[in-house]
Length: 437
Image 1 (tube, rainbow, N blue to C red):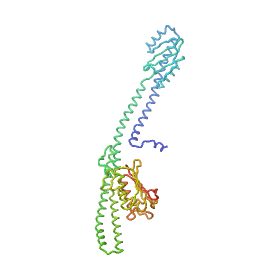
Image 2 (image 1 turned 60 degrees about the horizontal axis):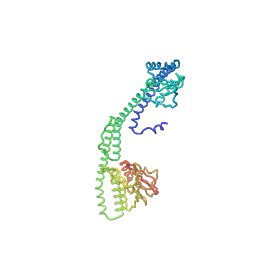
Image 3 (image 1 turned 120 degrees about the vertical axis):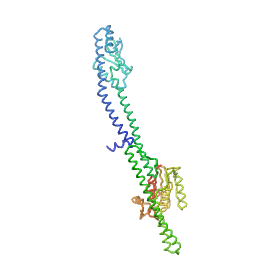
Image 4 (image 1 turned 180 degrees about the vertical axis):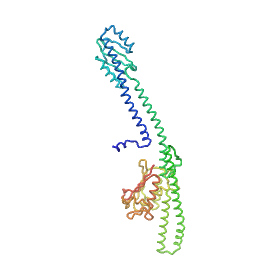
């Protein structure tokens, strides 16, 4: 039951805040309106109708007891004393058509009062005249027509009360909408700034605003962003310093190996030295991430075509299936390295590699498929862990230290996207890259 109700509740903060304010006011207005009509308006209307019905019954009784030629005097006296206009229509009959008022409760109230007071047949119309009510009673020799002022029959101020009530509700709701919108706006800006920072974009124009709690959250976000930036810079500088310090002895070792006579030991040492340099580059790339590169518009179609050309130069036949002109905000260099890493990983373990670029709603998907041996579903998440080297099937960086997929996922998540490994229609592994438009 609870889940069923939550399904229909609004999801946004603005809509929920508006519901919290407007719903109680609306319920209160409904209760007040019901109480007013039920306890006051209908009671007043019923008493007015009963009073007029009693006057009409009295006039009918006087007519039946007196002489017809004396009724003119009686009707003038009735008009002068109680303001009820009476006209005798000789040989007339009651109308057969009947029109109901918009508020049917008025007709029902008057009909009940007339039935209770009169034994004769009657007819009335509350819609023909705006300020009067036409009531006709059948008597011997014709019809008595009564014209009563509407205010004497019904309580006519009820609709004014309702209009004021709902007018005030609409005005208060409009004020609430304006104030809630102004309170929600800083929260939305904070969410957009956090989302932009998650994609590696600096929201420099973001400033804390709004209520005290929202400002506090905004300042906490700015402090967190500054700490993360310092941490990334320190990590990059540390790894850059380590890389610089290690390159000098590695260069000396390479020079010494070049001067040594050719032998199996020399070739093995050169391979070890190349592995060390490759591992060092991977460490630095993993630590650097997207540092030093600004985001901008990137045409993914052109970027994927460039990947195809680069793969061809390396002897890889990359089959491309591209949508036209898909542009997103990204750091082109780091995104290209991540996709190239995935293509290189696929080509190292398969004969056929394909790349598909497609639009999927508000996101863009890049699918890299191969016909290799694949990775077991239970090992796919392990493959993303830094320095992970799978013992069986394939490895994300067979010649490296196990940072290939970790760097690729880190880069793609830095763009607000996601990288997942799935079964490929080609029989091997599919790398699905999903990026926001």
